Image (cartoon, rainbow, N blue to C red; front, side, top):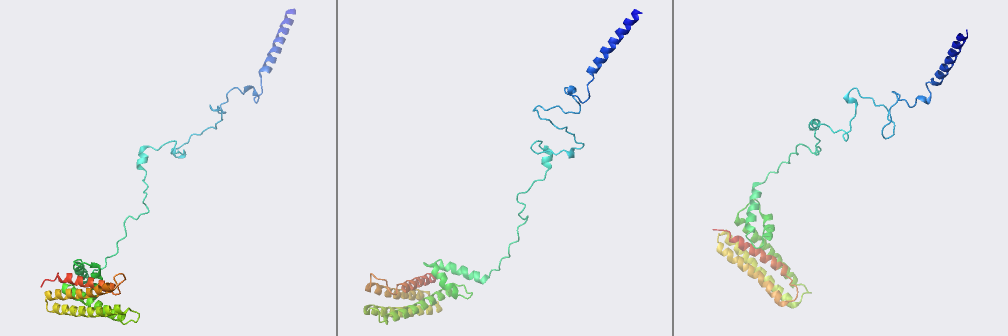
Length: 261
């Protein structure tokens, strides 16, 4: 009996310590006791100490955007990529040029003949500007010379009239007025020589043409010489007219030298 009482006491004590130990080890589920134990649903901290959200892998390659800087495209894809043209705004073909205007063959022939003749003179610009307006589609040297002589005649007539007007002006110095009357006579002589040159052209006498043209140039020069002697240190009243007529007569002589009869 005493032995049974001891067994009951030992069993009781053992049960008491067992239940107390179990109660001590049993911790509620939401307790911080298990915070040190890894939880599969919690992502481990990154090495930098920042938490990262779980990354879900895409199901297809088209759902994953790729930055050109982070992942360069393969060489095959770059080669197959269309090239962008930097001159796409320029039309592929240039507009058709405007049709050229037809050239008048007669006018072109006249221009070429005048150019060839005037380039043989000492004053080609004066030659071209005075001859071309008077030509009417004829481009031979004889016609060109006739027209240049006519220009000389017109200029000589104008110079003669100007000299006579200046000589009759009451404000003109009497000595200069006398010289200007002599100039008027010289211009008349030059005009006669130019007319004889025209007649020689009709007779196809190129020698007489050259003689008369040279005489006309001398007559024109006589006026300039007389006015220079009268007023050597002052502008000459007929200097411009004399220079122009001298240049025109010189051109006539140059063109006459091209005519071969």
